[in-house]
Amino acid sequence: MNSIDAFDYDAKTVLLRVDINSPIDPQTKLITNENRLQKSLPTIHKLLQRGAKLAIIAHQGDTLDYQNLRSMEEHAQKLTTYLGRPVDYIDDVCGPAAQEKVRSLQAGQAILLGNLRYLSEEISTFENAVKLKPEEMLETYLVRSLAPLIDIYVNDAFAAAHRNAPSMVAFQQLKPSAAGDLLFDEVAALTKVMKAPEHPAVFVLGGAKISDAFGMMKQVLESGTADKILSCGITGEIMLLAAGHRLGGTKEQFLKDRGLDVFVADAASYLQEFGDKIAYPSDLAYAVDGKRTEVAVADLPAEHLFMDIGANTIVQYEQVIGGAKTLFVNGPPGVYEDSLFENGTKAIWNAIAAADGYSVIGGGDTVTAAAQYVDLNDINYVCTAGGAMVRFLSGKKLPLIEAMETS
Image (tube, rainbow, N blue to C red; front, side, top):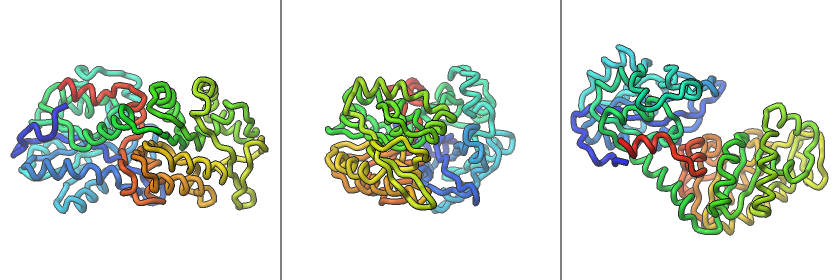
């Protein structure tokens, strides 16, 4: 990939694709975590310092999280505050008004264009249904509208690197292209975990999006990248079922209703193949009359919705984390948003922050949880990506990386 330092940007119109998609408070509709915004700053600052006329494109929300599909005006305001210089905003993606704003940019000026996901060709359902090749995307509205206005395309959006969308893979076909500093940093940190981890390497896989965990589990164990997987959250419960433990009708129905029971067969095959390299909880927590209660796995099944790992599991996992030389984390151990069930997440995060091993975390909910309990400076690398990170660690080639390498 071309480095951002490969080009002269003075008085050149630059289209910069970043990923500043941020968690939104459902009540206030305001951004609750600014990690991605902050990580985008060095590349934006560098381009402006070098005299670029900077048009920034980004997305917020999607069809799968429609509640977060909203204007990006607050993003522009926060970028303005952080950079100490104006980042204008127009609530138009690439229409006539946005095009005129791009044409009128002066050297050292920046504008954030409207939410890319306002365009049907940029949403995930379009990508999944239409399946355009990068060369076919040259006829999309976004590319036809903006490509004639720009001199250079820069991509710094590793968090969206798994997306085969026009904003990610099409402009490289037409314009000189470079990868931003964050994109290089993300790839370097994850490559260190995947290709050259110090051992023992421990992966902590939790949260509710268990497809992420199952997307990488077999790969990292088979390749020898991971020596131990500590499963928790829904992933841990699926592992318990795969190991022959009944959880109880209430939780099993919960998993079935969400189609998560389909992962049990894979989990069973992983346990058979990799044995004690995969750890699962020895106790779980639930609520009774507003009080936290814990039950040993040996005493299951029980008719409760389990929401956290128990005290014994916490101690066992803390010991493994403390001895790790490499740590990778995706997904919290419990429903930490409820104070009754924050024990596991809080304890695991503090163990990771205190560990001597090289630590990498990623995923929006993971980073939000970590920021609540520890100083993120105690984590060696905080990745902006979730899905892209998982696919990268699963050994899959990402559309953005392919597009940047062939530009």
